[in-house]
Image (cartoon, rainbow, N blue to C red; front, side):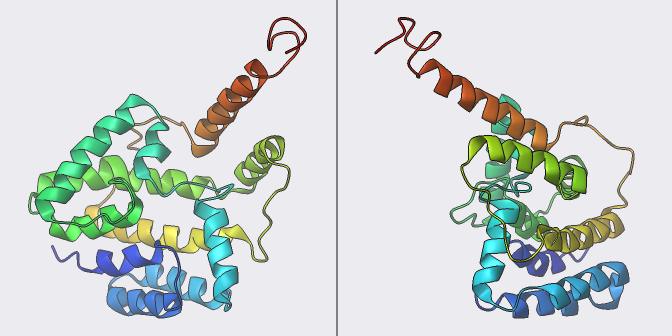
Length: 234
């Protein structure tokens, strides 16, 4: 199976640099007529992208990094900070090393790193399992986080945690297009089983809520007053 197109697709999910528009155009050319629905999704994505690189970088950060809509770390999307993510990271690191796939500054479960790894895996069984059990399942969950209800829920949580909400000039739903394109390509290449839900219904918003509750608990225990120092004064 020729999977070289995942190298081009992976770059769409890297932090945008000045050549980002060429990156998207090349990905469209590389998938060609083989994936018409995915090509259309990427063409629509390219048409609505901010033309100012600063606006694009801000939009990317809001989508995936700071006060994020979702994470691009597959293990985190599926497991949060549960120990099982650690197991996944260890096993994925072994596959990256075996395939001589450079992860750069990101972790082994970062989506672009996994997409670049796919064409380099010789063992078809390992590759197929990685797609169906990790990548495709996580991408589905990432797409769910761009729904209006999920976006409103995250903003509500972020308002409790931060003094100011980041509001980009362009809608964060723009990045739903490349995620949908990727899922269509994965579905075509690996014949995904739509009802395969091995990780249940836990979402990024669920992991996020848990983290913020932990942080709030720590802040409360470190504050002065009843329940803080326990004496009413410090």
